[in-house]
Image (cartoon, rainbow, N blue to C red; front, top):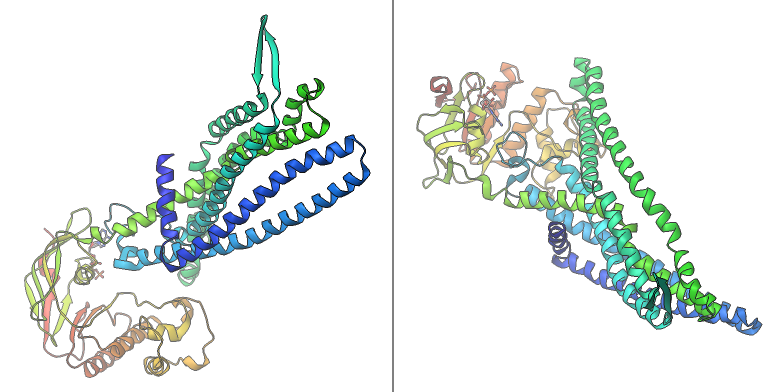
Length: 566
Ligand SMILES: Nc1ncnc2c1ncn2[C@@H]1O[C@H](COP(=O)(O)OP(=O)(O)OP(=O)(O)O)[C@@H](O)[C@H]1O
């Protein structure tokens, strides 16, 4: 419980931070003010009950009509306050959701947390389904936290107001005999309300406790299923070529079966909880009248008084029962807050955990220098022990060696993404560009692919045209699209050509290229590398490839085949 409140406060503080968060606070205050005005109207309606039923008892036609008018005004005011309050509450939700999503995205992208916390990269913690945490958990958290939080604050204020009314009204005493002893309970209606609700809340918590874990698990399984579907969409071509439909179907069925199994446990538990809360909800408004009947029969209150006490009592009980009525939503809030809080804490500390025994420093003279570098897998297994090496600006370094000996890992280590191992890497200064083994294209179509990762500026169209020249793709005729690389309609070699052209536009001082021409024929490879050298005559090129890079002169070789793992 304490842990839940701490998490809740931590997350709410983040929602309310920054300029946007403070605008949300203004909405919050307005919604609360409207809520309190609504409570005042409810208190007025309790008083109206007495006036109306007393007029009925006295068969006073004029007074009955006047009270109907008062009722109309009170309900109109109450409806207006409710509607405006709901509208502002929705604005509050989107404002705070925007803020917390902003923070989640910042932390996820900052210091490459999205890479460090990925399964298999050696982080002690792995974040499952980060996309769900950013998209769904941020939304559910804000909706539930603001909804339940506002209701809780209003319930607190309401309960005090209704209690005061009930205290003033239920002056009568309940007297009965227990084994010949006369027991008298003064203001018994006042005591009955909290005792009744406390017992019911205890029972609700006991019956509903497993719901938090079940909700947590349900959200996770739903996200796994969604991810499996998105993965199939991305890999559509490969799956179709493998005729892998049956295998995909089996995997999707397993994911869905997991959803259904947890869902069954979830609804079983909700059913058990409902067996108590449903009848409770239905009786909670009737019980007060039955409890007040002894006083009415004894002639201590009028019909109006009875209705007024019953109304005050049911307001107290309904308000105190907030915990019972909201239990399901609170369980969902607890599950979501715990996932989101863990995500934000882990992504915040991901940067701190990036140092390993393999150190990467900026080099003093602008050269790339490897000193005693040993590359290891995250579990400590040695991948390669490298010879010391220096590559000066403008030089060309060819890293070769059989598959699996650590060529790509070395590039990742230079990029600062691979801390596992020992030794020192002095990183050159200037603009460093890295081309991964599989060329990447973002969502957004061919122009976005041609410009990535540079932002669109006034020269964007011209740059895109230059990058796409000779690839048979015209940015002018492009439809806006959110499709990924598979839908760009480029062959593997063309994608590599596009990646190299993009690099030429970037004009880096150092280009680290991991098998940049592996999908090209020899002639295309030669002309691509000659063009690269001609465009970037002063840049250093560090190329990982199985074949000697064609068309390049004065190549320094680093053969990882000669430094096999120990
Ligand atoms: N995240 C990881 N966890 C464990 N081992 C890893 C991880 N990433 C790479 N390795 C291991 O490190 C070794 C080197 O991999 P790397 O991709 O650097 O090889 P490579 O020389 O570039 O191979 P190729 O020529 O096939 O691209 C491999 O044995 C690989 O299994």
